[in-house]
Structures are given as C-alpha cells and as structure tokens.
Length: 518
Image 1: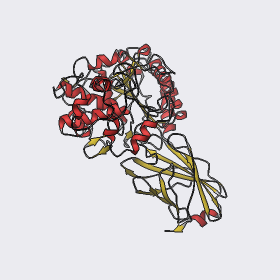
Image 2 (image 1 turned 45 degrees about the horizontal axis):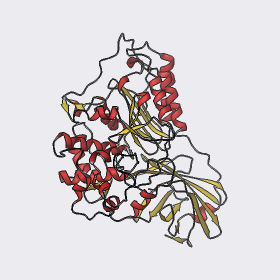
Image 3 (image 1 turned 180 degrees about the vertical axis):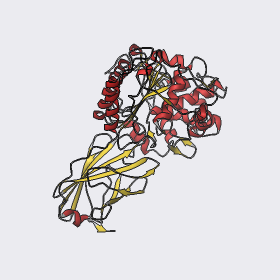
Image 4 (image 1 turned 120 degrees about the vertical axis):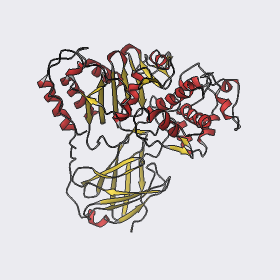
C-alpha cells in the first residue's frame, strides 16, 4: 500500500557495521524468547542467525536488496527478542539517531496510557475542552465540547483538517506552521463531523494531547517520557523537537536509534509489561490489536486505527507509522518486531508479507550456508556507499568558488549559499530564512557524500557534480532525516538560478541576487 504524506508539522524542508549471519550452529528447537529482566536497563540486544529463530536468510537477503530501491536507511527484525537482521544503508550508520516522524504519535499515545494507569488522567472519556479552560476557543459548539481524549487518540475528533494523507496538499499543516500559537490554531478549527463519527488523520490531535500531558504533569511530554518510558526501557534521553517553551511536538520530531525504537515495539509485543511491571494499563494493547476505527484508505480499505496505531487485520500486523516509511511493525502471532527507517514511501502490505514470508518454522531451522552467505553479502553491499557519476570540472568552478549567492523568499527556505569548490577540502555555507540559521560543512566532489557535524535535525551531508559547463548539481541528505534534496544551480554570466523541488513535490525556481565575495 502507498499512503502519501503522513506529514509532520515541521515544515522546514532543508533542514552496525553489518555482521555476517552465516555462522549458525545446528539447533534442535527455537531458543527461549528473551523477556525483560531486572537487568533490562543495562541489557543489550542479543543477536541470532535467522535460522535459529525459524526464519530464512535468503528471504531476508532479498528484503535487504529491495530496500535499496525504496531508499531505506535501516531495517531491523527481531524474533523471540533476538535480532536476526540489523541492516544499515550507507551513509546512514546505527549511531546516528533517526527522525521517526508520526511514529512519534504512538509514543505520545503511550504517555497518555501511562497517565491513565497512574490515575493522573481520570478517564479517556474526559472532554478535551476541560483542559483548556484558560483559553477562548472559536467555533465552540456541542460537537467540539464532545471531543474526548479517546476520540483524539482514534483520529475521530471530527475537527476539519486537511493533512494530505492520500496525496492532497496538506493545507492545515502549512497554515499551522505559519501560526504563532500552535495550540490555539488547533483548538479554533471548525468541526466537520461529530466526534466518533469518522476518521480524519489530524496531527493536531496528538499536539493537543502533548499539551494535556504538560498540563497534567507540569512537564513537557519529552521530559515525562524520559522519566516514565525511555529510562525504564533503557533508552538514553533522545532529541524530541518542541514547538515552544516546555511544549513537545506531539505528532512528530522524535529521533531514536532503530534499536531503541524496537524496544518500544517490544513493550507492545509483551502487552505493555516490562521487567515484571505493567507500564501500560490492562486492555490498552488489546484494544489496538482489535482496532475498530475504519481509516477508509483508498489503497487498503481494510486498514483500522486505534490509540495512534495502524492495524492490518487480515495480516495480523500492528504498526506505528511515520511519513516516508518510518515504521515500528509488530507481528504478535509470530513474535516479531520490525523497525524501518527510510526516505521514501513504501508498501506496508508488501513489507509485511515479505517479513512474514521469511518465517518458515516456530522452531530452529538447519544451518543454511548458502542463504547466510547471500545475506552477509547483501549487508556488506548496502553498507558501502554507491558513488554518483562525476563530470569534468569546468572553468566555471573557479569563477563561482567563494562567492555568496543570496536569494529572495523561496520554497527551499534558503537565504544564502556559498560554495568553496577550489579549497581543500571543498565546503559550503548556507543560511536558512526561517529561522535564520547558518549551516556549514564539507561537500564531496568525488561522487560520495561528505558528512558534517551532527545537528538537532540530523547530520547534513552534501555531494556535488557538474552536469555540464554551466550547471552544478547539489545532492543534500539529512542523514537520519526523511528526505533527500537535489538542487540544480545554473550559471549564466554573473547570474545564477537555483531550481529543484520542495518537501511537497512542488517545483521551485529562484534567481539569485548579484553575487559577492564573503
């Protein structure tokens, strides 16, 4: 299935070494599933060959190879609590946290569940407006007064909202991003339906719940998560974007290492229990597994939704889903957790079928040397960056090197760009418009990305190639982010034109002002 643009409200678009798994020993039965223990916080993932957990290495090798065509950054599969596949596609590496986009919603929902377990939240039927009595809310009618915590968790709040889930322009997200008061903007939305009547994918629901967490605990959702969720699961305090002082971005912006995201998946696979303690209230996970809210997705009418999770009932798969194929995918019947990070859309159904299809037994399989070698080869291949074609360096390179090109307002959010193409090493400086930020780092001129220093948004990586004597192509990748950019910078005498596509696929073309030396 191809679901378009599960966008998060961050509109600034700029901005293990693979181990061979062929050395299995013959086993007579599947190893005991790994369960949380009193040492879980210090515990590190155990690894296993696929065959030891009843899975086929050759099938996983095909899955790894297919990931290249779908712009995957990583693919992790754990069965019975042991990692059988841990793949990283260069230049992404496991120590770089990855932006999980709307998978964040599932984490926000998990925090709501913890409030309910602890009695800090009295009921999921608590009305939304009761938490915002300090605000004057526009379009306040009986339908809006009836919005509950549960209807927000199920995306059935009924508020009018256009997010572009099926490919339309995400007008509500764009307008929200321009509004100085993110919470007021959501509260003021008119109603399209009565709560509970219909599914509307609306990131505003998650943002209101993050604000409610703040009101009930006196802590940001991020700080509350560190105390109640991440620390018990042994996850180091992650970066999680905020939309203002003390207010965490409830619907996106969470960065996690894939192995840490898999721990959250394991919590749900174990019905909300961890280290002998119940972190989630009884029935929370079961309600998700039996999700009843129909999503009415044109590409897969069977999709259901509950508590910020997606469910494919026919495949018995539960998912936390983020824009551009960020996935935490659970197979309860198979005892499998899968984590995917990527930079493009993917078919959830195809992914689920290929993973479940790799399961051949509930007990250990014989050693599969051929399949193990295929998988080891695939892992080595994706860990090596593929170089782009590099054109001849024209005289134009020296003429433009060191000059700063300034741009009027544009869809790239780019204010200025300087390329130092004749220096060793080559490097760049760019300035974004909103907020005004200067970024600098190396640029690869040999067909390979050069990674800069880590930033709050990830690791910026650039490579540049000459398309012809007048056109320089710049490939930008936010390693650990969710999208790639390609800019074409064309020169004609003393003029320069920058062209490419924005985050939403719109064509952008902007002429630079007269250049000057820095």
